[in-house]
Image (tube, rainbow, N blue to C red; front, top):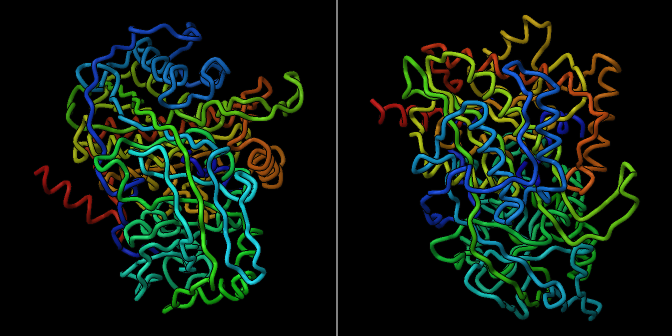
Length: 589
């Protein structure tokens, strides 16, 4: 999942459509550089062999061997752009070839090259310090403990800023369709903006925006982009666990080490000089230094017509030293051509990347369950979804399909959905030739459940098809009970939804057959607290994949049904993506 995306359907559980068109959700406003692909999957050796005894039936055993392989230390956490991490893409491509899926990438290959930049700050030579408060003291941040710090500027190795005045801009949102502008009348040139996580709807509890359901305006990606558009020098988001829906350790792990982005046409120069998160504790101390009450400012920030507040004489100074490496990652694309309507495609997506290998303090012993090493294996996130993608591909390869099936394992999801965004802008298949799509991400081995969760429930007719299949199995659809976490905007399906393609993001629920809701919640809570975006997200032979098998079978039947029909499922009337789809299909005609 996107670097802050949890295993939404199951994990999120645990822990009226507006009709507006969402803003562009990419890490920068400038377009990425387009590359060409020539490499074939047979060109490289693999750290681990392909399976030899999988079948066309969807089974827990088949998926277990793929999850175990992709989450093995041999792939070093599947870091995109790294020599070892990219071998996961080679493995997936060769596995597609083995099970009978044809290449669907560029130049007759299984790959679509994605130009990327890796930026790694030298923490020993980088700093962020606040000064000018009432006490007269300076507040140097301890990176990873008090703050995380990075830049999106790709063309320089050293940056610095001095005495940049701090201004609190509430949620940092400019949303004309809601009559909301946190920057109204404010010139932030040379200043550093400080803002709350999530969007005003979270605090207003239904009065504006989408109520508790996060909009894209609540995403960290949007906040940093908007600060850049406003001309700020720096942008700081205040972390709070509840509105963010993840703890500080997730922030510290996700924004440390090498940070990836697409190669930008302007080298990232349109972005702020620095971007940062700070802890709530740090924020409270800074607000006090500025003579402001943090709680009172939060109340003020949820008021329509909120006026930005200068944070006294507080300033931010610092420097940043980074290494910048331009490299290439790859989306893996496979296709099963349809017999009757080969130009119409059903899309299946999952991201193959994770956080890679980082410099971490080790704890415990290798034989212990919670041994912490320096490899972020990403077994749940997202070896599970990639395994499901390959399992469905193998099953469909044994079928005669009327329409084509397109299997897309994307890269750079953890860095902000970059691989899927790149594909959506540079598709091998036109978006108006994709009938519908299914996304698999972070599927918990929670066991069999009575329900399946739909993230972004109430969006499209794909839910009607899912319900029909679940009805036959005496199971039910459950809407995402934690919509304030914004999971709909935090996985790869949204890159295609923004192009109008009806997408479904569904996963197993939490009402376990053995233990009920309490057991399901406890399982998810444990994963979120102890394994998510940590080295401990590893595969275990003790995993119960019976529910995983059932859920993947449901998604397979849903996709197969669309592939062998002439239907074009649509967004429900009034959905924010409906108008985009209508325009796209009209261009096809």
